[in-house]
Amino acid sequence: MSASIPDYIYESVRSLPPLPAAVERLLAMSREPEVNFRKVAQVIESDPALTARILRAANSAFYGVSRRVQTVRQAVVLLGHEVIINLALGVSVLNLKRNLLKQWPGDPAAFWRHSLSVALLARELARQLKLADSEGAFVAGLLHDIGKLVLLSHHGVVYAQVLLAARQSSQPLHMLEYELFEVDHAAAGYALCQHWNLPEALAQAVAEHHAEAPPASDTLAELVYDANELIKRLGLGDSGNPYTTLQTGPLPPHRRLPSPRLRELIRQLVTELEHTEAILEGPSHREAFPTLPKRLRGTVHLHLRDAQLIDLLRIVLWAMGYEAVVIGDAESSPSTTPRLLGLIADETLPATRRFAYEQRGLPVWTELFPPHASYVDLSALRRRLLQMLNHQTTTAT
Image 1 (tube, rainbow, N blue to C red):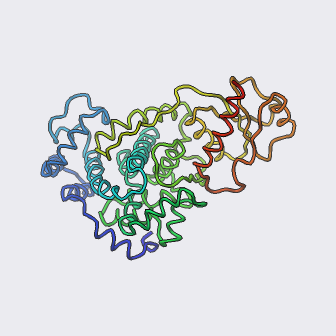
Image 2: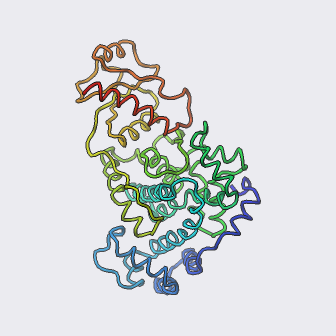
Image 3: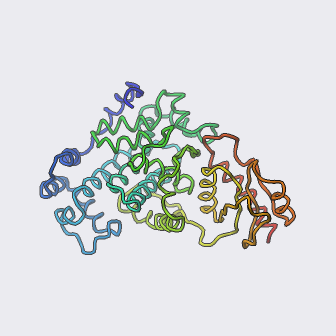
């Protein structure tokens, strides 16, 4: 990774504020073979602001402690030193984010919400799949887009214009960045992680969250890569990049969970967002928190051979309030699904299947995606789906 990062990025990150001394000491202690709980508590207590935040978080529903935590030492014993060190790291980097977000050309609260949503989802995927270091997944998710703030710090108004242009671009933000600056925000974020001497697994997760090929299975990098794409498809926050990748592995983390369980986790995440923002003291905001539809507005059938497109549409449609149901070639006519609005299909759709839907007055939508696409513009996809489904909903009513 370091070979592809220009020297000016390393010079830029060296000019940014360092991590607090207490956090640097905690990170150094985390690399020791045995960690002394008492020393961890003493290091935290040397920083009054960090102490207050640790106690505030430890007593929140976020960590589910059954009794009130009154001292840092109690927090370390109850939650474990790994959780405490990652929490200290997570809350400390927010000072840098707050300062840099003042230059963000869009809504800083929406950018922050995207990062926090990725962190929460990466953490929960790690827990559900029983992977180690779920708290590390949270911190990696929180930091995954930190490179955008590095580029914003160095390039100022030029990068701000790039972020605005990316909303109308024909390619994803990270490709646009590399074309203009010979580096993307993932590499810039990795350089900052190196400067802060963060654990390599965490730095690698930041570096690979836009990798051309999905990261190795059961790693922090894979969790963050998957959580980032899923949060964008759900429309939680705004990362500044409207594109989602279709370059996923054969079975990404979220698809290893039963669909009902995944949906339950996402609903819990949306509920948890506001509380977690308050704990970590993200940017102030006044806009309404995102919500998911409480009941379905209708059903859409899918006749697609590409599993990645099916996965994408299921998530996007569900977040919009529609149920996507995959149908097989063996079925000769539309099922009696309640409030069926139409069929999204590819070129493999048999003529008899098309005729059966059209006979019932149900539209068949094709060519929704460019052929052989590697990335999909989510903003354009949602607009197209809304146009199709709103018209059909009105007609059905």
